[in-house]
Amino acid sequence: MPREYVWETAEEIDLKMAKRVKAIRRRRAISQEELSRLSGVSFGSVKRFESTGKISLLSLTRIASSLGCADEIRGLFTQVPYQSIEEVVREGR
Image 1: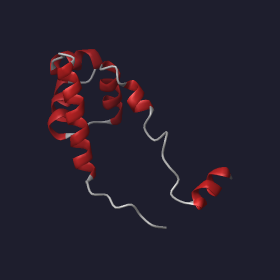
Image 2: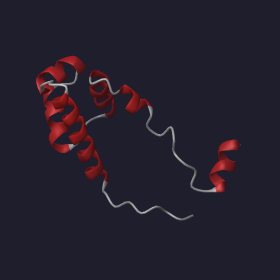
Image 3: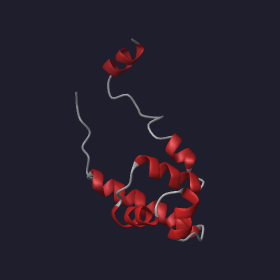
Image 4: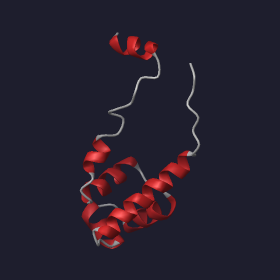
């Protein structure tokens, strides 16, 4: 089965996502401290996420919900295309 080439590491993808979340936070004029309070995620975790991209899935979900972006989390992996006819067959079993 052919594999798709990935040109970014997982860490690079995480960091890009963190930068997008940071941009949304700033656009909404919410400080890191306020986001921490709104989301229930520690200030240190918010700060670390924005600078490194490292965060737990639960904390990311809480942050996304606090920023009004829960639908983006809900939508993850919902429109994943099939890679082969074998995948279609296996899913039907």
